[in-house]
Amino acid sequence: MKRLFRYVTLLLFMVLTTETALAQQPKIRQQHEVKRKETIFGISRMYGITIQELIDVNPEMNMPGYELKKGTIINIPWSKNEPQAPTNDVPTPNSQQPAAPVKAEGVDVRNREIRVGFMLPLHKINGDGKRMLEYYRGFLMACDSLRANGISTDIRAWNVAEDTDINTFLQDPKAVACDVIIGPLYSKMVKPLADFATQHDIRVFIPFSINSHEILVNRNLMQVYQPQTEQNESIIEHFMERFSDTHPVFIDCNDTTSQKGIFTFGLRRRLEAKGIDYKITNLTSSDAMFFKSFSPAKRNMVILNTGRSKELNAAMAKLNGLRLSHPELRISVFGYTDWLMYTRHQLENFYKFDTYIPAPFYTNLQSPQTERIMLKYRWNFHTDMMNALPRFAITGFDHAYFLLKGIHIYGKNFSGGAGMVGYKAIQTPLHFERIGNGGLKNKSMLFVHYLPERKTETIYF
Image 1 (cartoon, rainbow, N blue to C red):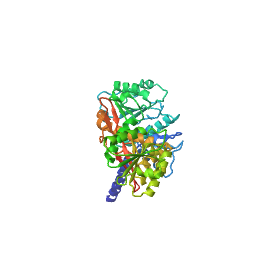
Image 2: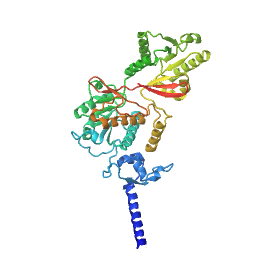
Image 3: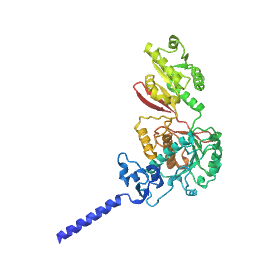
Image 4: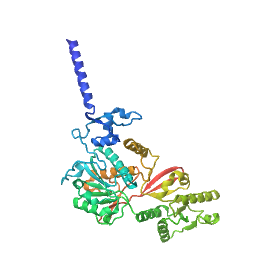
């Protein structure tokens, strides 16, 4: 009898253990037959689950070299966060999407999903569309990561090309339900979208180059782009703070196409106002005359009046010759954002001459974080990011994390101020300031500093 009791007890334990193990496994909702061009990322978004949840019920996806192929049958789990809420809403450009929920008055956005609308050219017809499509994909990647942190989003996308009337899209009832709209790309569309945002109390996040008076009068707008004149003022201000003890040397590079004279002229006026002596020389000057412009006692800060590669090559050759004949000189170089495109060819010179490059972003291709997101992009979309500066997908990722986390924490009171979110950008830092009684404008800039010991640092301001 005792032996029988032990057997029954053991059997009961095994049954309970098996049931517990099964209960801990992800529950399968259904199976999905992979269609042409579908990706792991797209399928996870289709069913409202994370990529990791999808992999957990399809362990073969972890195998090296795994590829998602048309006709493959994969398991779809219930979401851990919403086990009873399957969804087929796929936020892809031009998709037929179900009707949007009506915005519930009085329901704090911090207590529900954030409804995001995209009004950008999302197509593959031209460069604008391709860049914005990559930006959009990066934004979606961030949404997937944020979901794992308890921040849910409902994405709606409209393909708002340059030759379309944005008012047509604003008549869509789904647009009214948005908490925030990302766009537009074209200045002519800002006014109607801004008016629509005011009418329906919607935040508008303008991610790229826009020139519009609306930012001065509409509190619903957040504009990332800074006009070049404003960037110049900020850069000059921080140049004066950081390099006031240097000896500035301006080199005329004889570039008749250059627009950098606006910056160098403004900087010279500020130096004169502060009583700081500077010298002007020319790439065509003799070696003796070129040397006379440099100080043997102070660190020399060299400023060119061009952003072009050809003249930069010539200037670096001139500086290398000067250093060979006068190794005692301390020389640093102050450049332009354009120069980041030439890093591959100029890196040794940048290190050698202690170069500072002002920019609103910095893509460190050697950083593990950058490598991971580029690999994840390739995995999700079966293509590489465009070879551009900035990387548009990483810009989208940074924007999404900053904006959506901010809205999740602060709701409608999110102003994008420095330190509000606590997110360290991979590429594109942001901090916003209110423009009078108008909207919020990004004021973030940085110096990329190439140190002689072959290190690179970013100095934020």
